Length: 171
Image 1 (tube, rainbow, N blue to C red):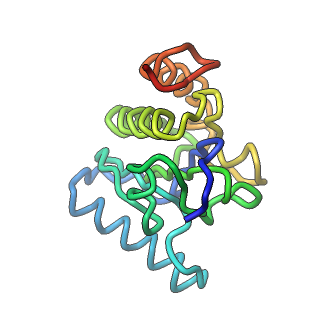
Image 2: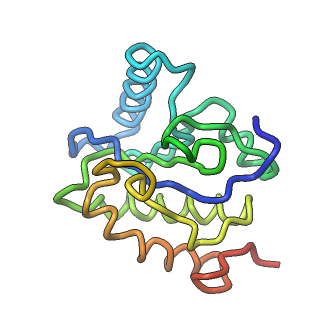
């Protein structure tokens, strides 16, 4: 784990099929497939992103120890999800491909909730939520999910308190 807090959140999509299977079993299958691909095919030590949200709105830990670090709120695990940002950003991938369609309402709500928790724990401003394409040449997180980022920032700021420019924890 790194000895510092993240400065931002980066939103991704998995670029996988937009399945109608919203079950917990499907979420586990997705998590295993993502880890297998990144470890066995790409040769990484672990999954690159910190968290994965299934289309059924299940939030799962990606990179080992990310959940423990988030619970403590004092450190982060270095990711492998966005070149140039892995030591300063929490990566959240969302199951599906969001080039032409938006994520399911429940998945979006889970994304808001996770971002709220991350912003509170690490004192990250809601305005510091970005898409993968803001840093690397990629379609990720897809045109439709990318278009939702201003709304995501507002929704997170509203729940964290302090308006879209502050996003600091309450109290």
